[in-house]
Length: 355
Ligand code: UD1
Image (tube, rainbow, N blue to C red; front, side):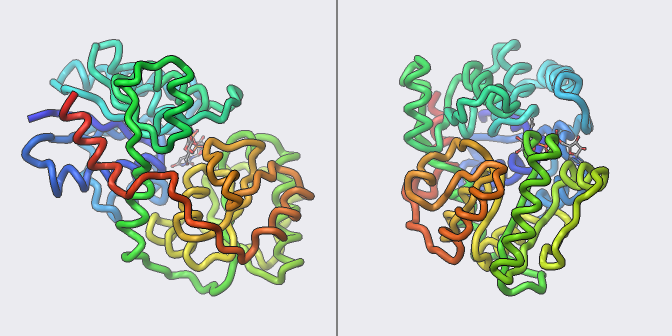
């Protein structure tokens, strides 16, 4: 029996891990056993526990409870706790997801103990080293034994960086697996019937008051100009910062709410007219649900969506946001075929078992 430790800590990782955990349980339970370690990076019920309940993810065997903090201190606490867990137990491999501080800490603790690291969502690049996520993903790739690339662009990025071709696996995207699996189960408890979905959480938007103000001004104008509601589930980071700022006001058409669950998010995507976001995951999920997205960043890792015309990069620029909304609102994008066949999780597990 192959024993794997899955390391998660932040909201998008719970969602990605759900795809693998289900597939292990349903198809590979006699070959591989999985324990989950939660670093505690995200800890509010709406950011963490509700995903475990709703997506039926096995309860974490270990929870480090590190909480929030500066990057160095947060990552250091994770590193210490993960190393102790790995030393006190016997794992054949460690599975990490994406690009958060939990990903970096998991990979670094394991590689120093000579335990193979498997990176799901490898090879993504924004080529912007000021993003903490970019640093995390580049370093994690370089510590990994197998690199599971969600797109051909990611495969290409890794080849250019000189990785051994045998390490790179084009797996497709587990988030596409999830949309296919869960979209039939969506639950929608919101009153709105027609709306734009908006989210903001990246530090380069939240931690720069001018950028945040520009985005909120643009949201207010979009709501008025298109006589539309905007559903704005607000990340705790963004909420704290907006609450502390003066001179911010929202149009009554902007409906602020707590972070949605995964199934609520899918339902909201299906009903939305357009998505405005700085999230990488939501850009893709919008496309998987046949919606376009205006991305509140200067660049994206998901260049396929830009090339296909389903995403426009508008940064935090009021004029660019308004122009992009005009172009994409109520527009149905072409369904992309860049993210695999919906069986990424199975491919990942088979490759780990055959290493
Ligand atoms: C992290 C990831 C990012 C991912 C995002 C998804 C890093 C560097 N960033 O960003 O890649 O897209 O998660 O959400 O790992 N907070 C709470 N309650 C919570 C969680 C966070 O109040 O449950 C607040 C805290 O004030 C904290 C802030 O949000 O300081 C930011 O949390 P942090 O862990 O730094 O990451 P995210 O911004 O969520």
